[in-house]
Structures are given as C-alpha cells and as structure tokens.
Image (tube, rainbow, N blue to C red; front, side, top):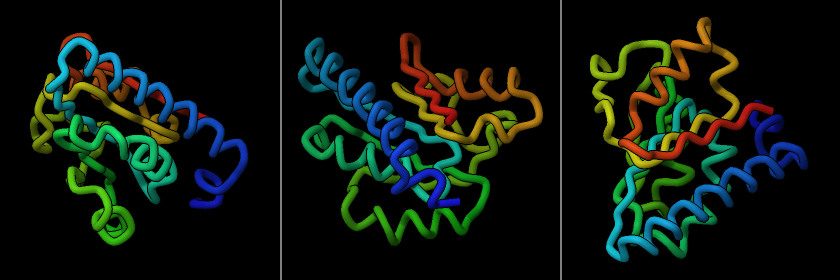
Length: 150
C-alpha cells in the first residue's frame, strides 16, 4: 500500500498539510517556552508515508523534539522504519502498538504525549469511537491530535 500513502499527489498533499500543522504547533510551543521538548506518538505509521513528510519538515526543529514514537502492529514496519528513518532521525523510537487495545498494557503512557498522529489508520479499526478515545488518552492536557484519513 505504500504507493497509496506516499509518492502519490493526493497523499503527498495531505501529508504535507499534516506536517504543516505539526510545525505550526511546534513553533507555537517554542514561542511560549523556548526550551520546549515535545513528545510525539504516531499510531500505525506503517511504511512511513506520513512520517517521511513529518521528519523532513521537523529537521529545523529537531532540538525541540524529545521523542517521536513510531508505532505499528507489525514488527516488519518497525524494522522498515529503523532502516529507512533511524539513521537520520536521532529522536526516533519504535514500539508495537494496537490502538484498539488499552494503552497502559502496551507500555504507552496515558497523558504523556504532546502530539498524537494517526494517518490513514483509524478507519481500519472495529470501533472507531473506542479507537479515537484511546488515541486521545495518550495526549497531555491541551495536546494536539492530528488525524488524516484520505
């Protein structure tokens, strides 16, 4: 499915829009706290179509990113991310995560992330209400939930 979510004009447009929203949020946080260090969680990152756009746009703000947790239900996608993005993204971490299951049991801390990204993944769950609730639960108070569903 990589061709559907990356290097495709529609996907690239929406990935760019999401990355722009994230950069605006990072800039705003830095405007309030110059030493702000954000924690970002990407749910179901898969082949990294959205991640690639985000990492490119975050380069000038790398010092403001404490961690970017790249998650998926498949270890194969995490291995792909390690090879593809790991060498160039020093703040990148990887974790198996199923957004349909309770967070704490999977090692995802409730209320710990400044930003949660879910791009083209929530539609594939059985109960969208519970899934969005789980995604939101990972956020700190006043955090940003970025959902992209083409």
